[in-house]
Image (cartoon, rainbow, N blue to C red; front, side, top):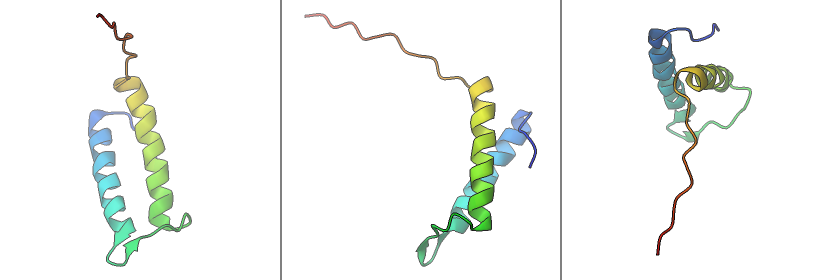
Length: 69
């Protein structure tokens, strides 16, 4: 697996995450096996996505709410 470097890579990773989540949600319910190949790939992809988003889509801290009476 390679790092996500471009918006195209990012979009492809998001699509793959959707496919993996579908794979892990079979007709018999959720596959919870942490050693399942799809689960391992999903966990790695999510880490790559989080790293990319922290740089390209940072979440700014909001200012505290001002309460007036």
